[in-house]
Length: 171
Length: 123
Image 1 (cartoon, each protein chain N blue to C red):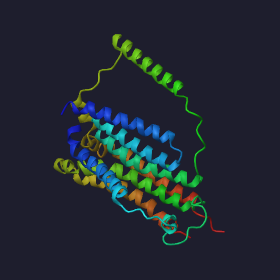
Image 2: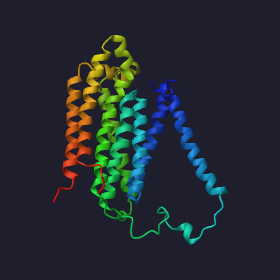
Image 3: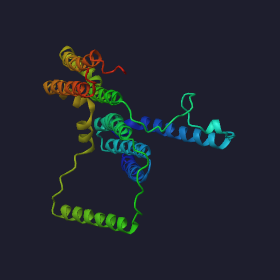
Image 4: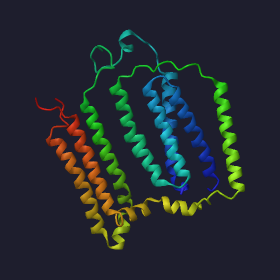
C-alpha cells in the first residue's frame, strides 16, 4: 500500500493541472467554474496523499461547496456572457517560462539539500496522527472551546450583516 | 492513512465511469429526431422569452451567504461528530456537548433573526 501514495499523488497532480488549464482556457464562465471544482477536488486528493484527511474533507466541503457557490453567484450577478477572446496563446513563451521555473526550482532544491537547509519531513505516521480528525476534535472542543464560541459569534455577525445589508429598507 | 480511503476512491471511480458510460450510451444508441420544439431551451413548459442573463434579486445572494455560514458550522461539527464517542469514554461528554450546543445556539440566533426580519421571504 506504500507505493500507491506516490502514484496517486501524480494522478491527482496531473488532473489538477489539466483542470486548472481548462478553467483558464474555457470561454464560458460557468464551465470555468466547473473546471475549478474538478481542480479543487484534485487538491483535496493531494491532501489525502499527504495524510491530511481533515484538510481534505474541508477542501471539498468549503472550497468545492461554499466558495464555489459564491463564485457561481458572482457570475450570476455580474451577468457575464462569453468571456472576451483570449489573445493568441504564445506557446514558446509558456514553454520557456515553465522550463525556466522548473530549472530554478531544481537548482534551489539541490543547493538547499547540499547545504542541509531543508527541514526534515515528518514521518508518514506522525503526519497521519497530526492530520487525523480525532486529534483535532480533542483539542478543538476542550482546550480551544472558547475560540470556538468566538468563531460562532463571528459567523453570527456575518449572518446578521448579510440580512441588514440585503434587506430592503421599508419606505 | 491513504489506504483507509480506498473504498472512497473506488466509489468515485464507479460514479465517474457510470456517468460517462450512460452519457456515451445515450449518445450512441439513442434516436435523434430533432424538431424545433425539442431544440428550444426548456423553461418549464413556457415559451422562453428574453435573455437568461437578466438581473437577479439580491435575495438569492442572501440565501447563498446563509448557506456558507452553515457550511462553516458543519466544518466545526464534523470533528465533534467523529470524536464524540472518545469524549464519552473520557467522561467529559456533557461538557463537550454543552460547548457544541452553545455554538449551535449562537448560530441559530442568526437564523432566527433572518426569519423574523423576513430575509428568506421573496417579495
